[in-house]
Image (cartoon, rainbow, N blue to C red; front, top):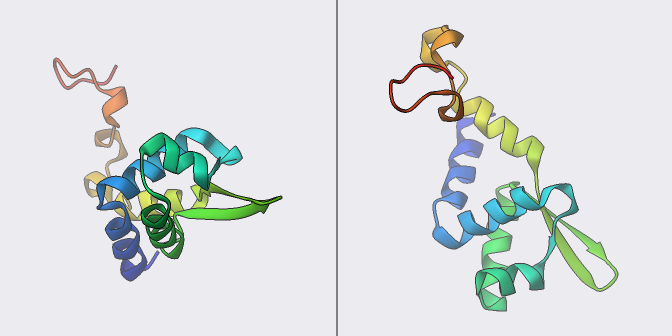
Length: 113
């Protein structure tokens, strides 16, 4: 991934509504969620939602598809994985044993679970 693409993706996520939309779509998985349902669940008006969805789509973080008269959005997991890979490319100076995720660390003593 080029730095410009990473910056665009991170900039798209650096806004509360867009981050909420993306997280909801990640939770929904490949099935995705209809645009109207996203707006209802997050309390975002249609015009504002459209702006946020366009920004996330332009950053390639979400993908729209048409089903009948509905537009269903889903997270672009491949692009999300590329962004995470880019961010962690040289994690811990190449010592993978130091690179444990927060889920795998006992917060009381910092040791792996």
